[in-house]
Amino acid sequence: MVEPLQKTHCGTGMKSIGNKKIQLGETSWIFGDLPNLIAGALEIEIFVCQKCGKVEFYQVQSNDDIEKAKCPSCGQLHDMDYPKCPFCKHNYYA
Image 1 (cartoon, one colour):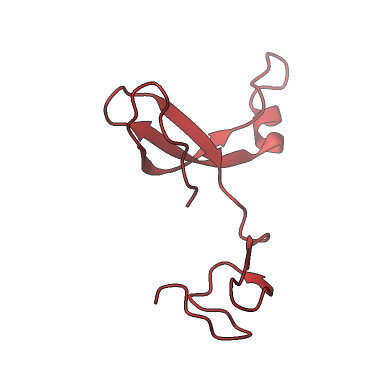
Image 2 (tube, helix red, strand yellow):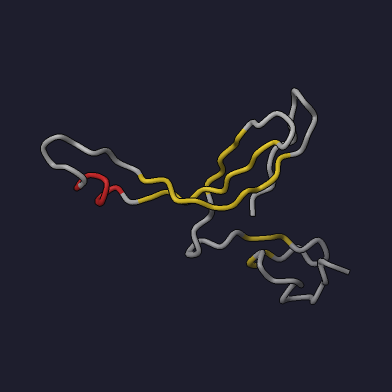
């Protein structure tokens, strides 16, 4: 999950309303939907302000490229989906 930007004009935080896939490409008169099929889709996470209704989109990281986290204890990089550092066992939720 992406951490949304804080609102600037109304001061309210953004709330995630889920992930969606947006179709890339175009439908053409000659080739029909073929360019859409070739272009694929982009997965995004959608955030909305409950107060003013502003909507923001953030690209979702693909599963092939897991984001890395730096351990504050030992400084080693590891996949950020671990609840504790696999090297020094530092617990992030303690």
